[in-house]
Image (cartoon, rainbow, N blue to C red; front, side, top):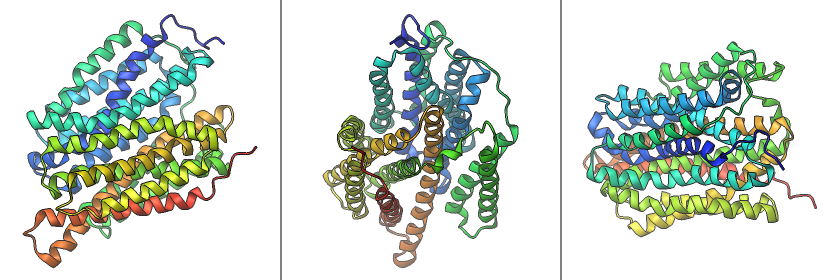
Length: 466
């Protein structure tokens, strides 16, 4: 009944990490609202501006696999304080940016911080709270992570309506200073520094492989899929990842324990969860831009339109968890994906004259479906693992979520551009909002395919044994 590492004030110990995780997840979705405005301010196109989203997620995905290794080389305080300082520096660089390159650099520094803080929050919670309190504290951590994306677009919309886009990043500074205060004065070292041997080859393979794939897909939106740069980068990424996977399967202590993919339940549950995350991110990347550039509505209204769906996303997590406890994963996952399919079909039917009420309803339907499927799929996957495998499984899913999310966003951007070009070639370039809406339709068709693929995988979920 005792915590593995008893501390005097566990909630004060957690405060800095909870704030850091909130800011990290807030940053992941809040910038989607600002992208149309940034395109005009920085004089860049859709293919370039999406790097502010994909680049951020790519860095998180690169850092996450090494979180366990980093915790064996540095103390808890060192990791969290460094992460908060990195986010603070990245936010200031982004707020003071005078060019797209400078802004992207600041965003990627923020990605490093989020990749360090998120896994540490769960690790520390597991150590400093007794077992009978873990359910409550894990629920609190999950609520922080889910509520931040719900609040992000609305707050950003209000900020952009009154202030310049730089203030999207300045608002992080006071929160991060408060988190640093709690980290310096209340955070305790709870991990064990053993300085395990670092497999440098795996490190380089991971960075080169994942980044090459994301970069190749991202470049395709501007240069086309037949461009030598795109083809060469994708081939390099796939080859390096193939070598990386083989190495992880043969190492005694792999960076990512990929052997657990041989467990059918984990493989199915993890795949559905990653597809579900890709559905949410691709749709939430397209929707705010459609509202602003397709319907020509102001940015403040964009945030308000997206708030009900984001709030439902946060609140449905608890419902989905309780439903899993009662009936297992198969029913809520399949029901959720069917609801999500209805929501994305509604979005694919939107036009330049669609009402605000219709958009809000379509967004809510999509969020209900995705959230209903996400938590049961994750629990189904992790319940198939035992002992140390659980930590490996959680790391793999968190890592692949960010990588798959970055790839899905890049593919949605590429299809958005294709749809615009297709419309303009038939109708001319005078109706820019109609062309943009047609491009958004192409992106939503891709999201629809993701839902259908996830539904096919859901057929392999087994009912719980009596």
